[in-house]
Amino acid sequence: MMSAEALPIRIMAVDDHPIVRQGIAGLIATQADMALVAEAANGQEAVEKFRSTQPDITLMDLRMAEMNGVSAIIAIRKEFPSARIIVLTTYVGDAQIVSALKAGAQAYLLKNTLHKELLDTIRAVHAGKKTLSPEASFQLAEHAVDDALTPSEVSVLRLIAAGNANKQIAVQLAISEETVKSRVKNILSKLCANDRTHAAMIGLKRGIIEL
Amino acid sequence: MMSAEALPIRIMAVDDHPIVRQGIAGLIATQADMALVAEAANGQEAVEKFRSTQPDITLMDLRMAEMNGVSAIIAIRKEFPSARIIVLTTYVGDAQIVSALKAGAQAYLLKNTLHKELLDTIRAVHAGKKTLSPEASFQLAEHAVDDALTPSEVSVLRLIAAGNANKQIAVQLAISEETVKSRVKNILSKLCANDRTHAAMIGLKRGIIEL
DNA sequence: CTCAATATAGATCAGACGGTCTAAATCCAA
DNA sequence: TTGGATTTAGACCGTCTGATCTATATTGAG
Image (cartoon, rainbow over all chains, first blue to last red; front, side):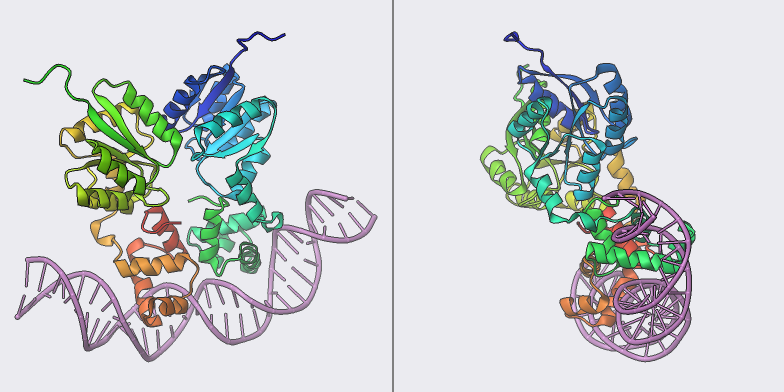
């Protein structure tokens, strides 16, 4: 039989904002069954700290300098396949949610989540469950699976957003202008965009490309 | 002569993320000369709470639902012209910084600010000084004053970003298509953009328009 | 292995876009 | 009130864009 004072859930917080880490630390401190054992300000640090402390649960932001959250999740789970990671971030679009879950995140929470929901999720994931916040699920449901852009379409979209004409894109990707046009056509169709500008904005909103 | 135990600096935190407010609360709690007297999750709440508590210093995020930070600053300073407000936000572009300062903010800090710098700024602003974080100053210095878009140019840029053609923009703004073209020309020139798509992205990056 | 999806490439064409030039009405500040 | 900025509007023109159509090579999944 387990002791009444079981081992606390060991947690690492990864976020580039000191204030957010402070907030997580304060929240965890009020919970008897949890302990904050590490903090990291970017993905690189997160991987190193994970190695040295091996927390039960990692709270991970996605937008960070040095190494973004998705890359950090991939790196950590490559070394520690059983790592349990909860993404805790502001709205970044359905494409980012998909990437994070594919990379091996167990849960996805938005930062405007209430304290109780965050604590519940930590305990649920520690117990082996997978969860998605209602908002995240909604974002995913909004877009059918088949409207995902192919990698080469994404590369074209990125160059469109940077202000390149089809001809310039063709040169940079070493393909013909006609091919670029084909991809643009597909992009507009998949994203339901009126024109290339609209497509770039939708790509941003959905997290397919970054600013 | 003042007592050794002077009145603490009364602070309000405005941010739509509970975790950030928790972080600010935790930080303030460690300082003997400060006290958190109010919290608000959006601009609307911020105005109401300001009325009832009249804090010495308000820490204000910019991106919030209901009422954004700039509107809240304007509303608060209309009623209380001596209100001292520190903007505490993630990078949102030079245009937003200008708006916030014009609205009457005394200081502008990025959320990746270290705790010490935030505390220093609170004390400095409470003592009547105005400060800008180095990053904010840099963002401002990057763009000359004369490359600011006029209000009508901004309205065109917003419609460009929404995926409208010049003809559609003309109808929506009740002006001729030639006029729209004139504005587009000015926008491209002022923002140093290759095309309308590039202009929309730059507008976003600089906080001239929102997603 | 086979089917479907993807990447590639081309022709054609109307319409949209962006550059250049001009110019009048309005409005605000010096 | 006078000059400067803004807003409005137009002509002209070459280029780019997006729609439609076709068609082959490659690749990955079943």
